Amino acid sequence: MLFGSVQGKEDLNPAEYLSGMIRIEHIGIAVKDLAAAEELYGKLLGCPSYKREEVASEGVITSFFKSGPNKIELLESTRPDGPIAKAIEKRGEGIHHIAFEVADIRAEMARLKAEGFILLNEEPKRGADNKLVCFIHPKSANGVLVELCQEIQ
Ligand code: ZN
Image (tube, rainbow, N blue to C red; front, side):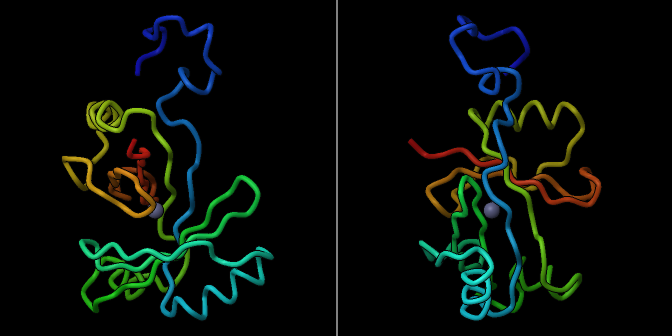
């Protein structure tokens, strides 16, 4: 989505046309022990996890929390060589990625690629929570793993 290219944009909320990156959808946190982390984050946020979901293709089991408008995704590896296990091995537990909701994931992927960002997948793939996702390599984003996600309609 380009600036000024949206027809009838005066009808839209500015956030819907000023940027294809609509909002932070969730923050992903890598954990070693999902059950223990769920208990801890339940206490921290004052509400229990509302959903667990395994993404077998990524070797990960996720658990989601909602705190007001904010969403936290806990991630535990289901295999020793999975991306979450590797991240914990390198950097320990902690913030793993920041996910942005996008209106049009393919358009954002093309825009970011043209801007020189390194995409970790060339095609959107199916992530947790009924989303199409794409990851941006942390070395092209100041050390932050960025996830783009778009709700599957
Ligand atoms: Zn995520």
